[in-house]
Image (spheres, rainbow, N blue to C red):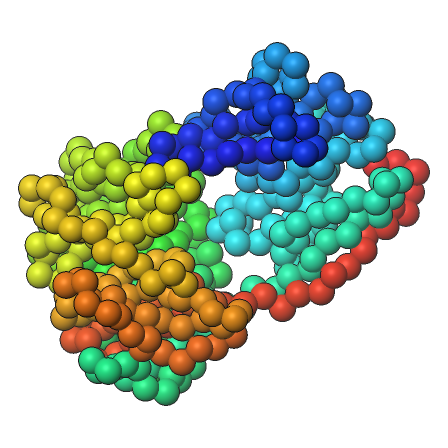
Length: 429
């Protein structure tokens, strides 16, 4: 068998082959954490894996590895994100799950790349998403999940004891990301663009909705700017962070890395903190909102892109895994000196984003129990935490408190899915 062993605290992903019972491990290649989904060729003479690149030449690649020597060669580069490669039985092509900028990488389609010609052809092309594929032994039938994403934006009254009954603000079109402005309006990512609306969902208006998909909107510098990410606005394939004024004008690029995602601005509006893949490592950085050179905030590696500044601007919180296979913890630094202050243990059911509550006394994050999801807060003083929303079936993908702390916004998501079969109807691939 072949597999990848991720070492998040070291920023590595080792490509390994082993016997089917797990014995006889052999390290084929030491890669960064952007290598995914290895699969044997039918003749056993090569292994294909997908790699995230995000440079001027391509967004991703399919790499071929020699299982005896570990030698790597790039088979196919693409402006699409190619994942889950699967060989056809006669080795004439490789099936992939592909996503692109046209959907902000939120909608995956099935494609096929001819071997050895490297020609890509779509197999599906519709508004559904196909996150996984399985192929019959004769190579003539694909089993896949046909999925429609539903992102429902909700708001609920909030006090120190918890949230009240949520009200649905928007469900169609689905929301992928959201944030609050200082005056209590909502910034939302929908339809590969950024829109602004009132807190009740009325008066939805586009802020950025053009040929360059934009996502991750956050309000900055007391509402003066909106910060967002874009994968193609500056040319090439890198994912960079941009700034616009409150009306969608005066665009300015703030970062030039290969994969940068905005997290939040400091309360004084001077700094943007963000998550960045740098030389294969997922790290927290900050950059002046007015432009300038970025600074790495810690040697500790991130386990997710959630980097949070306390409401008083004194502290920085992020999630990291200090030891391979160990628990993920919340690490807090002094925002000025960047020196460690403390580490907070998360509830064992935790997963996803972390955010300070508006009073700075607790840090919230989603928890999962028996297939249901709720929001939990852990006090920064280390005392016991508590649940602040009811358990529901939909995953909590994002959440934000208003600056005054009186309203909690929740993005709950699920997929409406069916298992479908795609059958070959002609003799050609």
